[in-house]
Length: 192
Image 1 (cartoon, helix red, strand yellow):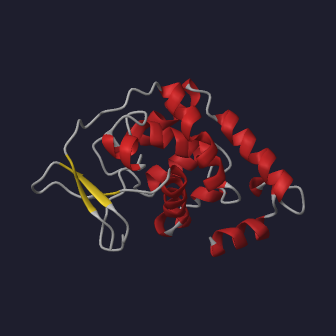
Image 2 (cartoon, helix red, strand yellow):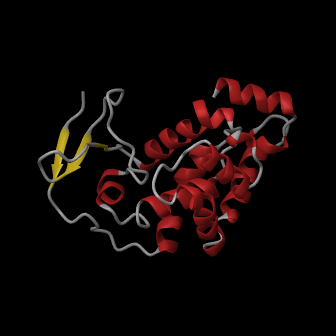
């Protein structure tokens, strides 16, 4: 079991601009997304929205841009703001660990049923995430549109192109994940 950390600083200590944060996390996101079907633009857009551009304390100090809770199946370090009854959040050792964890979540259970990883465009993946109930907040019916605006505003599809180029270079058949035939994609999905 990891350490339980009581964080007593500012809830938003960071000073990242949106562009700085996207650039800072892009490499780790692309590595986490390799051959998973999940598009980096979606993950970066989510991270930007959910962490106030990497400026909330969970993202800034503890590599948790998504607010993943430290529930009973988490054995790593965890952090909470102040003392009292505040929930504990996962504290990841690195950004890559955080993004790998998030991509694994997006490949699992209800998201797999909605076929998130098999969708070929950011808005299609976001619509599937919304249909699967990714966001349970009051803006849940606008979630896909909200993240898609961030993706377009900060030109995040360029990171998807980087991913495709890397996958073509890495894969034996010189095809990116979304260029594979349906059987290969289904096998990736089953064994993810």
